[in-house]
Length: 103
Ligand SMILES: C[C@H](O)[C@H](O)[C@H]1CNC2=NC(N)=NC(=O)C2=N1
Image (tube, rainbow, N blue to C red; front, side, top):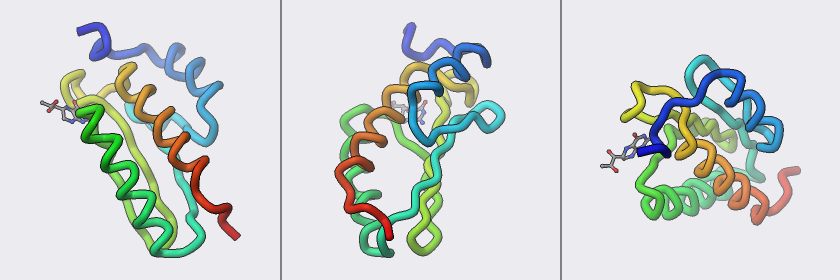
């Protein structure tokens, strides 16, 4: 499936140019987000969980108090970045945009 074709590094870097907050970390893409507080962080995790289930594509999520780290890669593509990751990153950004501003 084309959505699960691994993207080369140049393509990933180019696409990240329009994905606010995301960086390439090796074969993955990553966004760190600091929520207002711990419940706010967990709320965002729950919103992202719904989006991930709908997309059938799931981020690794590291939760440390109110700091969330979302890491995306595609298992089916050998752990590399595909358009499925870019699409989910866009959706995570849309979810973040609905959150109250962190102090
Ligand atoms: C069958 C199911 O759609 C696949 O196993 C999905 C589940 N969630 C996934 N999530 C991520 N990040 N990568 C995948 O390749 C992946 N595959």
